[in-house]
Length: 156
Image 1: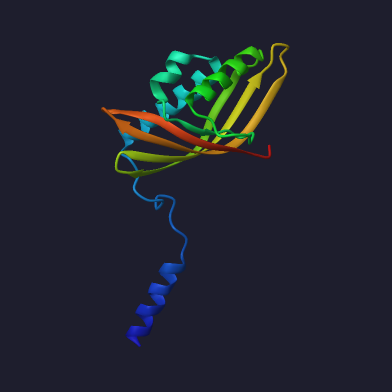
Image 2: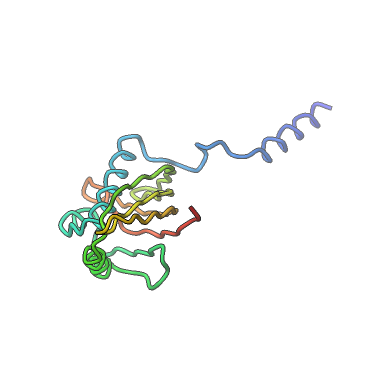
């Protein structure tokens, strides 16, 4: 009888959903803050065409998959996309990351995120984008570098 109770308890535990913190090893709070700052800097640099700031946090070996489909981009192609965005006259109005989940494996961190972006055109019209992302960060020489991302959009 006792064996049956143990087996049933183990089966119920195995079938229970994982708690929110059970996504794997996470970086400590200080590393999480630094990664979120690097990510924010990369996004804001992109939408303000700040090449120097972008290059500080995004290394040469970038692999970027944007939310609009199309070909994957390296850093040079992403810098060209930044210039194109700046030439469009659009500016960043709002940027929020409502949900973030970290997984750390040695000197690499995967950040699963959701984002809410509002862009504003020269004539005041706004364009809202809601999406999800998987972003990759690698720790080198004591700092986190934003080495890749894959973004998609979700309905608003």
